[in-house]
Image (cartoon, rainbow, N blue to C red; front, side, top):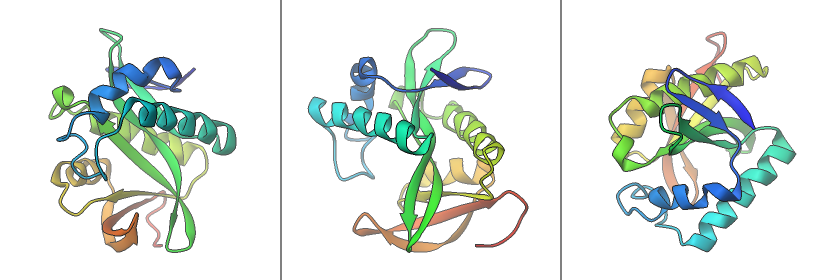
Length: 170
């Protein structure tokens, strides 16, 4: 099911048929450098099932980012509910195949997700990013998020980036 469209991509709900494409990300040690590690096929299948649960539970989740010109899965981007310091926040998350890095696709998709999140009525959106992940931090900044502070999440310290719909504070 199509959720969003950008100039170069369609963002749609994931399905089990996306596992092969996602393995291009999950099996790449460089793409997964800021995550606990690469994922096996069974872990990728569990990842997709988790997104399907998010769609049912929250109405949002990470979506498959598919190139319009080729139909190829380029990555994933979307909105997920995350607990941050005892509060539920909606996060803009993105992860793309390495061959599509430095082409502006993550920024393009994240901007669409930002606009969609605000259209859904969220007053603020966040991104949780490993401090060493400079590329991901640059994407967040291009989308308009600003570094608020560092927080503990996933048993490590991450940067909390925030964007407010009307310029307010956390």
